[in-house]
Image (cartoon, rainbow, N blue to C red; front, side, top):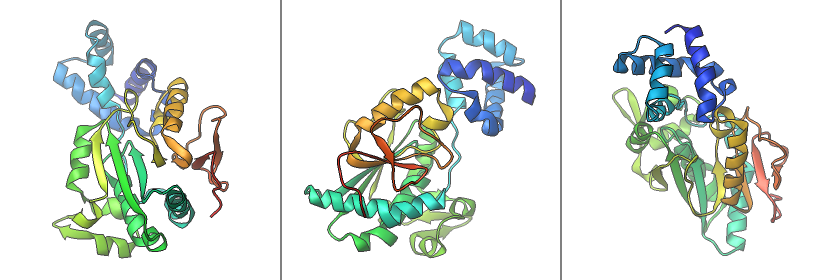
Length: 277
């Protein structure tokens, strides 16, 4: 299957999965390789035959959906976002928690892939935030729809390339070298709980101080689905809580009830609290 054939197929199939081609343009090679493997498994000669197969076998759309999951991630991705979280956002959220009588912040990493984002939050908290916020703990729920990615997250062993953006001192303190990988020490894993969940069909029932939903909903999903899921995400934020999206993403429509955090491109806050540092 050549590139043009794959592009044509994706432009036909993605809207039926409530996804959009614009989000996949730059990462299509990963998806096309998976689809090509799927065609070989099914013994189909090309994408035209696959269209017919999908029409005759509706359950196959589930397999195609799995082929379209993007698993690109690394520690401390978008450093400016994490720096702002550590310097301002998390300390303010910790202060709010104490004011309402809570001793633990609740964070959610939605679409956590191999755990890099969730563990980056844990490292950020331990090395930069916790010394400034005595009396406040941290719990992180990390969810993804891909079970293989979650297996990698639980194992918590990563290539050197995955850690390239992480401060060197943190890597030396928090990881143990095993052959060609760096494995996160248990002390930094304890705050993170992983769960298999597709946020298109189910979200956690509780509310969070901070939700990170980066490089997923607002990149790959259709605008209509983005608007629906944004509403669902807002309902799971505490008043004064923060929603973090990808550095190059934007929210659909007017995003009523959310304002930018101190002008930050990728961090938004809900109303109902004084968020001055």
